[in-house]
Length: 207
Image (cartoon, rainbow, N blue to C red):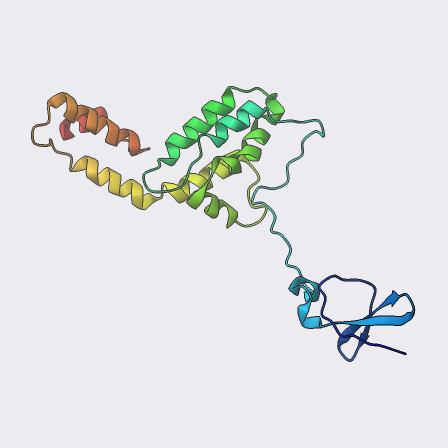
């Protein structure tokens, strides 16, 4: 006596294709091997995929470092705790200054100084800033200065500079604000407008 059963299963084994279904012979005692049918529609979708897109390379060109080169774990932890998100309230110049100050605390040798900055800079970014970095052309950054300029140009564009400079030139004292508070507020505005090049006489006149 021969018996055939048609059952859908999810596991994959050695099989042969019959009329677009997969027949699997499972031996049983005293009976002819049972035939279980695999429906191709039940197979994981990735099994039928023929093309897998390559993962893009980093914007920073591959750096030449020694096989034994290791970045200090404390250094990397401090960078991760001072991330730049790229939103309007974040000052890119202040963050670069903080980034460099942290890097200067750890010594890797003169040859590796720039390499370290480039290697850990992506970990310094998050949210909007990390999205910007990931969208840069592959292997388009070859030096730290190029990375710094690209970063500043994106998050401190000329339009922002012009707006801050206009606010400084139109500066005026607020109601119930003391001269000391007034002066401190102006100094804060000047610090945020990096590269304003205003002479001391012009600043005093504005004040």
